[in-house]
Image 1 (cartoon, rainbow, N blue to C red):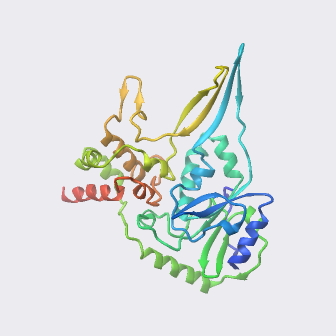
Image 2 (spheres, rainbow, N blue to C red):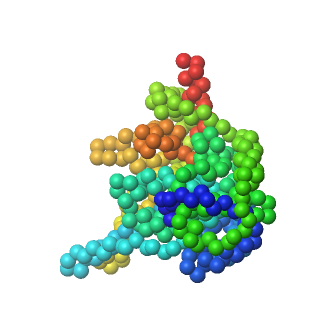
Length: 352
């Protein structure tokens, strides 16, 4: 659920085995989704049993928010043309689901998607899924090579006031369980043992230790102005010419990118049309094509749009558009690193 209220009173240590059995007991009413191990990688998917979960994962290619809340492909309408045109609007599906093991960066990414789909205009499909989804976050126990969430305040431990239902912290054979929503409070029937000041101090020490493990850091102070003053910095053209393929991998794996396109598919008998919403990417040459021209025809302009939308342009929602998960760096086939681009521009700023 969306976690309108927060519950700070429930902090208990629960044996991991008991917690996983509790998840299994909810299968009769909820679809259970979580991280699983597939080859060398972790993937969020629906599971039949908590035994399939891989809670020790570092990162995934795709975030749970863009797989199970804002879907890559969504059927919106069907048009039928049999003498007269009829329109059948697809009703939102409200299947109950639990997404467990969601790292803090991905919870913050979901909160960012909420700003897009649940504010002035509420997207009915996203809203229905959000209201019927229980989110169980898991504080990170490892730092992957390209993570920089600590620099942008999105991890490695979760501090968001709401928008999720339960928070887990790994305490060896137990989880420190913190309940954050009314629904989670009503569902959770395990007693465990109470967590007091010693346990919370241990949690704080764990977080501090994690902050010391990051290899990638960036100073995000004043980036809005720094980018605005360096729109023609040579790094944009240089990176575009030497590295960028405009493949859009960065956009597809980004947990906060929300742009979409509409696509119509006509049946073979030419009598019905299905309209879909599907992910779009600012790295695609046609993304900015409008009548009379394309305002981001140059590859450098499209690369600049992605980087500045992640680390600048805070006038849109009042927060950065990145959660520092590092997926865009990891899955870029030529190794483009938006933090290195930004540091190069900051260096220029210091010199000037």
